[in-house]
Structures are given as C-alpha cells and as structure tokens.
Length: 404
Image (cartoon, rainbow, N blue to C red; front, top):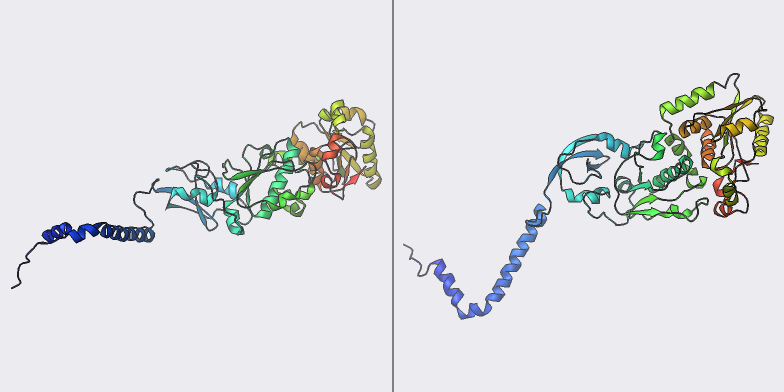
C-alpha cells in the first residue's frame, strides 16, 4: 500500500515559494514562464489566424461579386455595409471589357478591413496598398483610372480617348462618373460613382502638345487624368477601341441617320462642314488666337471636294446657322441642320463621307469619327498668337489631313 505523501501539492508549492533560493531566482523563473506563454500565444495566432483582443472590426457576410478570379464585396465606394443588396449591373458597368464580365455571385464571409487592399478604393477611410505593382492581371483588378478635366463635348472627347488608351496600355480599369457630359450622348459601359484613394492627378505641359510623360505613370497608385490631351498621338494606336467606345445613344444616332440618308438620293457623296463661330468670332478671341475661319476658306474647301466628286452635297453644322445661310446662299447642293443638340450635330458629322473643319475641337472630332478625307483651316490657331505657342500643329492635326 502506497504511503501518503508527507506534503500535499499546495504545501510543496508554498514551501518552494518561501525557500530563500527560489525567492532569489523567482524573477528569472517568471521571465521563462512569460516567454513560454508568449510562444504558445504566437503559435496559436499564426495557426488559426485569430488574435484575441485585436479584432477592431467584426466579420460580416457581404454580398460578393466574382470578377475574374477575384471575389470583391458589392459595396464599392459606399463604406462598410452589412445588408448591401447585390447589384451585378453596377460591376458590369464599372468593369465591363470585351474579355471580362461578371460570371457569378455569392455570399461569403470576409474581413472588411481587407477591402481597400483588394480594390484600392474608398470604404471607411483605410489606406490603400501603395506598393509598386507590375503584374498585369493584378493591375486590371485593383488599379483604376478616370478623368478630372473639364470643357464641352469636343474637349471631353479628347480626355476620354486619352483615358481609354492610357488605361489599356497600363492595364488599368478605366471609368468615368455616370453624370459625365459624354454619357449624355454616348453609350458608355465603364461608368461608376466609386471614390478612389491613393489617387494622383496627371497633368500636361501644354494642352495642344503631346506629352510623353503619360507613357510612364507610376503603377503604385490610381490616376485621374486632368489635362486636355488635344493630340491624336495619345490614342492613335487604339483607334478601333476609341471608335467603338464613341457609340451614340440610339435616339441620337437614328435622328442623325435619317437626316443624312434623306440627302443620299442618287448615291451622292456627303461632305460635312463644321463652322465654328460664336465665341470665336469676337475681336478678343481673334487676338488670342481663337480665329474663326473666313467665308473664303469655306468656299475654297468646298471647291476642293467639288473638283473630286461631281455629285458632292454639303451638310453644314454650325453654332451660327443664319450666318452660314446668308454667306452660302448662292451655292447649290447644300443643306443646313438645326437640331441645336451637340450629340445629334456630332452624329451627323460622323455619318458624312468627308468633312471640312474650321476651328475648335468639336469639328475635329466630327471629322475624325467620319474617317474620310478631311480639310482643315490652317489659320487655327492664328499664326504668331498666344494660342499658337501652346499648340503644335503636328500634334494637333493628324498628318493625313489637308490644311488649306
């Protein structure tokens, strides 16, 4: 029969604690015990990815959208939400490309604090990942580019074209806001109200000269293009992409098509003429270099096409139709439009076989979209003027256009 211990475990510990040797060394034993407990704590945290006491935010179940191989919460730009309704159409608009569409939706648990690192967009003010990224797939899924410039339709079309081409080159996701001017006239798939973080505005040295710094933007951040980018050189490598992106809304296109087709009897060659006057016909604008083309240039350009196409018919688009009718009333084979709508006027020019350009970016884009022969006014900008110093004709006018 086993003998009963002389001391219980409690008495043994008590005696050990009162022992002088142990009392002199107990701080060392305490340190050893703390190290051992810390080690166990770290192993537990790494193994189970859970550190008690450090969970600032709880885990939520958020609606998720499958974008390529990446699952992203469907609350982009709206902060942390626990009952967000799934809006796949929002992602189809924001991320729509020819290669990638939303393929599935799901509900999965996520740690909300990871959202900024995944998408590089604003949720609740967390910082985005600012490391340089070179993987093209990661860039497309996490880096975004938009435009922040201003102006009327012609100016914004230059900005949008530069955005599409630059985003394609860097493999960023391009988008504009739903209320952007371009969205009033064109069917734009990449629209969103998303708020970007870690974003920087890219400017330009001059609004009418090609700036090659746009070729080498830092991929550690999002970008907003804030210049005018009035040069064909920003997007000439992506002409098919630009043309397909400027897709007129059905009602605008149909109205313009019916008007142009009504003048095609006898298989006539349609030549559009854009006459910009308005703010460019003042003496102060002329002194600055914003020169309106004289009637002599318009008639000279018309003769250029009459010599090449015996069946030519001219359609005049202008912000001063009365002035055009007064000065061109003696010419036969000419029509005037008065839709008084920038989108419809632009659509009419784009449906012409060839185009005559006077001044300004509106006529420039009408001619570019038409894609035929283009004659432009060499007096814009006015030679030797202040505007002339900011614009390079080689950068502004495509080389195959004809200056008269």
